[in-house]
Amino acid sequence: MAGKLFKHILHLEKLNKFLTINKYKMKQLKSMMLILIASISFTVLQAQDTKTDTFKVWGNCGMCKKTIEKAAKIDGVEKAEWNKETKMFTLLYNPTVTNNEKVQKAISLAGYDTEKFTGDDKAYEKLPGCCHYERKKSKE
Ligand SMILES: [Cu+2]
Image 1 (tube, rainbow, N blue to C red):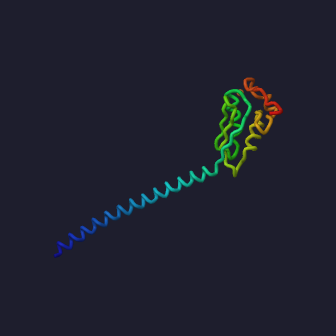
Image 2: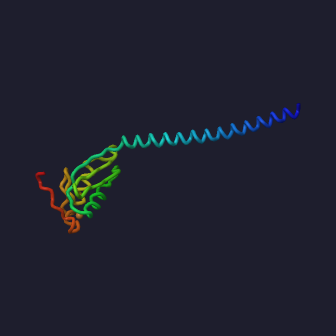
Image 3: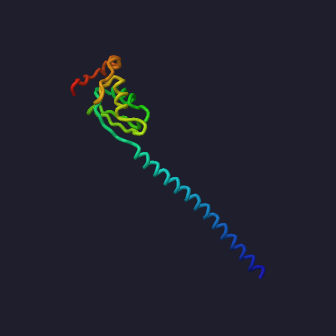
């Protein structure tokens, strides 16, 4: 009788251990799921917060590309990419922080003509020789 009871207790203990491990695993799984859900919603929110625009920026070489892209990286700009072949500038930004106009202004201050602004003349003069691109005509 005592032996049977002992066996029973032993069995219960095993069961308890098994359940505890499972509980632990479930907890782990739950927190992993939470992290997954959190990162997905973060990405979705971020995507909603990002706006894409394209506009033309006058320029001609790889050096221009570096200068233009560096100048464009103001607060709120997530991606700034200029294509020297097409002269098109692709901008990814957070519209709650900055806007298209501010970025174009920043580029123009570095000496480059953009769709909305004429590049700063002094900055243009200071550009390396290879970067003296043909300026935007006043009526374009
Ligand atoms: Cu250049």
